[in-house]
Image (cartoon, rainbow over all chains, first blue to last red; front, side, top):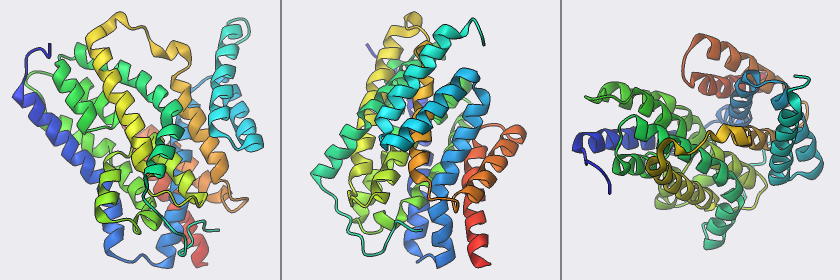
Amino acid sequence: MFGEVSLTALAVVSGMSIVTYVTKAGGFWALDRVEPSESVRDGLDALPGGILVAILVVRLLEGGLSEWMAGIVVVVVAHRTESVLLAMVVGVGTLLIVRGSGASFV
Amino acid sequence: MSAETESEQVGFSRNGVRAGFVTCVPVALGVGAYGLVFGVLAREAGLSLLTAVVMSATVLAGAAQLIAVGLWDWPIPVVAVVGTTLVVNLRYLLMGASLRPWFTRLSSRQAYMSLFFMADENWALTIQDLRDGNGRGAFLLGSGLAIWVFWVVCTAIGSVAGSRIGNPETYGLSFILTAIFLALLVSFWEGRDSLIPWVVAAVVAVSVDVVLPGRWYILAGGLAASLTEVTRNVR
C-alpha cells in the first residue's frame, strides 16, 4: 500500500528532518550555554511580536479587501474578549460572508 | 515590561501537555487542511505515501515541506531540497531562542523533546501561555502533538485521495493562521512601547520580502524588532 519504497527519498527526508531539528533546537541551545546580558534579554522580549508582525504584514498585503475587513474584526474581537479562538472563528466567518457577498462590490 | 520574571515557576506536567493539546486543536484543524494540500502535492510530485508520511512525521515544518515537494524531481536534487529546508526554517532559531526564559528551567530532555514539536502556530500559542504566567512548560509539547497528529494523518489522506480533494482555500482555511496570529499579536501589545519595534519589523519585513525569495522576511522582521528594542533601551 505504500507504493514503491525509495531509500534515496527516505535518506533525503532524514536530511531534511536533521537540518530542521537543528534550527528548532539551535536557538535555545545557543542561549542556554551563555547567560544573556540584559540588552540581549530585551531583544529576546521583542522577538515574538516582531516575528508575528513580519508574518502578518506580508500575508495581509497579499490579501484583498475581504482579508482586511476580516482582520479588523479579529483585532476588535481579540481586544474585547481576549479569546484567540473566538476571534479566529468570528474572523473566518466574516471572511466567508464578505467573500460570499463580495462579488457585487469588491 | 517583561512578563518573564526570573522567579516564575515553570513545571512540566501531564496537565500542561493536555492544556496545550486542547488549546491547539482548533488551530490543528487548520494545519490539517494544509496537510491535505501537502499530501496531494507530494503525491503529484511523485513521493510515495510512505515518503510523504515519514516527511511529515519527522520534519514537521509546513512551509519547508511544501517548497521541498515543489523542488522534488528524479533524480532528487538533494542539495537544493535539504539546503532550502534549512534556509526556510532558519526562523525557528529565533523562535527557539525566544523560549529561553522558561525552557532554561526544564530538564534538557524535556526542552529538546518539546522543541522537535515546535511549529509556527503552536510556538505563538505557547509564548502567549507562558507570558500569562501559567508556568506550563509542557504546553509546547502538548500543542505540538495536536499539530503533529493532524499534520501526519491529513498528509496520508491527501496522498491517498490525491486531487479528488478540492481546494481548501475556498473554505477560508488559509485565513485561520492569519486570524490566530492577529489575535495573538493583540495580546502581545504592551502599550506604546510596542509600537516602534513593530513598525520597524513591518517595514523591514515588507522590504526584505520584495528583495529576497522565501521566508527571509520573517527572520529579518524579528531581528529588526529585537535590535530596535536593544538600541532604544541603551539610550
